[in-house]
Amino acid sequence: FTSVTSASKLSSVNIGCVYKVNPELSVASSTTHTSEKACTVNAIGAAYKAPIGDVKAKIGSDGMISACLIKEVAPKVTLTASGTVSTSDLSNFKYGIGIVM
Image 1 (cartoon, rainbow, N blue to C red):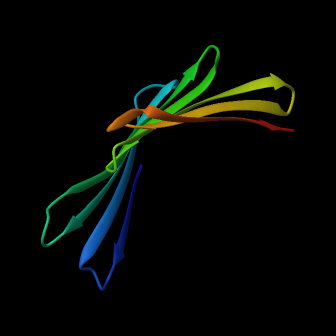
Image 2 (cartoon, rainbow, N blue to C red):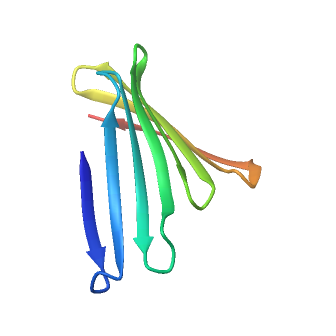
């Protein structure tokens, strides 16, 4: 699946691509293309349907790595554990947990 959007009267084009490798794994990317710079990678990510739950991860052009685990703990109740860290400062790890009912 691919999406294309333009901004600033077609001076830049944003392209989002998702490739489903198999029923469990998908990879995605987001890029920007301008006349000044052929390709800027905004983010690259993946989603994996693991036996323990859905695992999603991405790295952005700002050097931030984010990941989460989404697990259905009961019917219509999901638990999400997530974390984010900068590649330039691994000591500043941010994490969170959430429940949706």
